[in-house]
Length: 263
Length: 263
Image 1: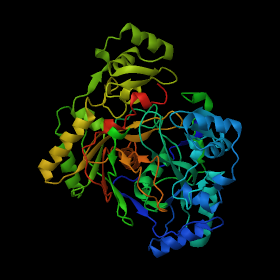
Image 2 (image 1 turned 45 degrees about the vertical axis):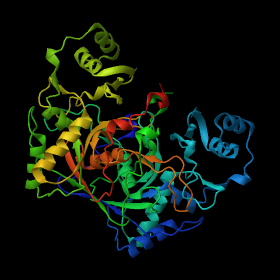
Image 3 (image 1 turned 90 degrees about the vertical axis):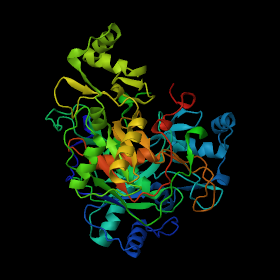
Image 4 (image 1 turned 30 degrees about the vertical axis):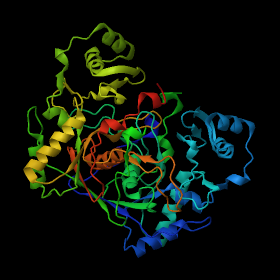
């Protein structure tokens, strides 16, 4: 596990609040839009000035739209395997076909189609989604390389503002043992992803034994409180969280196959 | 699933930041301490005045200590099953004995001992933990009834401050497909636990289909950013998150047996 983890990636000064600031007023995003520029403009209009060290959590949906990761269902010819799976679950075979194309393994077919995506994420429907997309016929796919998307967006924002911000690309995933979705990190740059506290002393000077915190997922979840699902707030600034910048990729958070509890 | 879910449990006013405020200066908590009073006093010393609607996220560890949910390993006689499991994993048989007593089912023995607790939570070691406890020989157990603990703490704080706050009791749990721990809700009062958005319109007036947000877990995760693990900040105030108070219990978030993806 050690290879995936940055030791003591972050440290907070106690007593200082963390703020979760919504970036409102972003327009509907279309393929080819310069998302970094639109975010900077929306922030300016909302009187939010970016600071070095700010963490921007950006919903996958707007990243996918800007990158043209949209598919029209009517353009899809379902394969026989997709049609079979669709028939068993009363699903749209074209949607299942898209999900299979985005996947390298089916984890489970019922009650929801859970797959491992080409990135390695285990999630429902490979992240293929109908919601917050204009038109009944169009679905969004996850970005091809969400860590790369995060890097490009951070670089674009830096060019426009001269500020060094960290970026997390987030999506809402379900969990096997707990109901409901939580916002998690699928792409990241600049921010600790996993914070390894093993070997650091606790309050009583005992060394912590099994504590690796999924910091990027907690940052994404915090932003999820601000984003909601229906309110059109796809960008949240997290301010006041102290950390050491890292080069970790969000894909580091994927549990390696040999440690997967259910493979 | 519907029985577990409060429809549209919360609603945020867009554009307003959420603040995560650490309550510093809490003393080491001992069995029998009036935790509500100690939290109110620490907040006063830190110049934090509670407001109606504030959400207090309280780490399980201090609740367990106040409730006397501590066990001395040297007082434990391991049973034969505990000794067998311990021998296979090179674990302390007394610790395994305590974990088994806190569990109603073993989900997995390797690489970590994952169980279903008597509450129904699926987690490593039944939440039994060495860290941030004085003495090498003592471990903490989860509260017997974390929802009840949350209710009592909210009532105690209301009596002392005349303010109606929501309370979440949190602990850090692992996940099968993703590395690292995140802070989750194991007890709650007053706050939405699952927010059901199914049937509400998205930005494009399409009805959301499969969106139930695990709000209490996202609130706990946000607080986890402030708590850290080594810094002695077991209480965080979340301010600015708008919601309708509910009677939901955090145990509602446990996936029912017939929907569990791996039972």
